[in-house]
Image 1 (tube, rainbow, N blue to C red):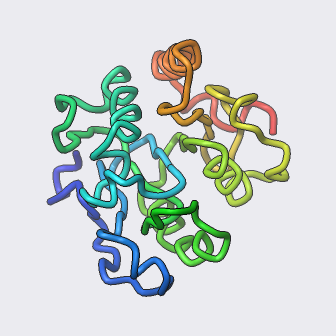
Image 2 (cartoon, rainbow, N blue to C red):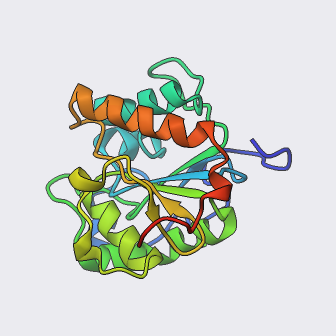
Length: 209
């Protein structure tokens, strides 16, 4: 964690009383802003808070769905905490397209648009080397904003673990680890470990798209 960073939880001090989506204000327990290392080279982006994240206020935590991603982070060396503990993350930052949970449905387009400024601010301030969109919706939104290609060209199952050229960084999509097969999990770990094992800064912008 950066020496000047006081907290991993919402380190940029984003609005914790946001009322941009009145319907979600009535259903949420917590506003779930980003969490992690502000000097991170790797930014993981999910779609919306899970039930557990809505309780803890931390993306990808508090339940089995969140723990599946934490398990991947531990396997890659980004996290060191035991299962069920508050994440202890180095060189990675966790965030979401939307910051509030509706218990009966995924976020609608307007809610993602209302939260876009939070995500774009995090991307700008962190300036990561690699963005990892977790799941189909996250991939489509990240591709629309940070590549020169149409988001319809991307599919998380097809591009799982592959490097995609973004504007200023690489994008490496991940199938939602809570829904991934063991083979898909191992594929991602192998490809990402290979990326970590070479100087990925030298390859940025050289691949297609």
